[in-house]
Length: 231
Image 1 (cartoon, helix red, strand yellow):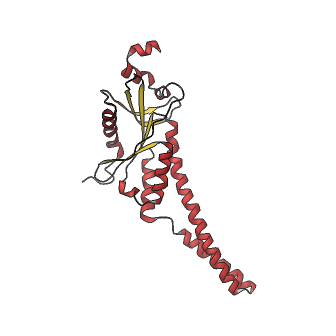
Image 2 (image 1 turned 90 degrees about the horizontal axis):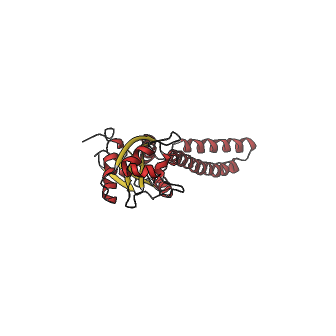
Image 3 (image 1 turned 120 degrees about the vertical axis):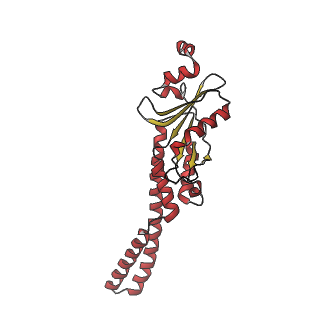
């Protein structure tokens, strides 16, 4: 059985998505290109191109560059949750409140204040740490904005079980849902799991293929020379 390290999403995602789009559109030709760059120099690890029934190009982008960082963040949270520093912070605040109360001669009031402040500190630290972790994950999704496509996919080298009963993963999946990002994973058994389907995007001008440096080459392969001459 392959190890977790051996099950790299890049080894499986390309064949999976080629088959996915071949079956979905009944396309005879699905072009698969790796590390394609936009005209602004941003790279998609995979680009899947096909011709729709109305003879217009359809492209889907695959992103795996940030997969290790995302997988590590979600796995760590699943195993350990938030940091233990929250308890240390709350304990320090409680000690400080007790010390101030004792010095001022208000021992009982200081004890009550210590309980209140330590609890508030713990909750605030928990809230801020959760927000920070979510923010870091969402920041890793920003790269997908730089490589527009009819559909966008995020490939993760992670067991789909890690995403279950994982509050951080819940926030992450909800963010992908809002952005229309599809997610596929591959875990220890080297099996690709479709976690979430992408939502089709609408190109405001022309088509998404025109955003890429390989536009002319891919368009020629899909549509032929006659389309290029007319354009």
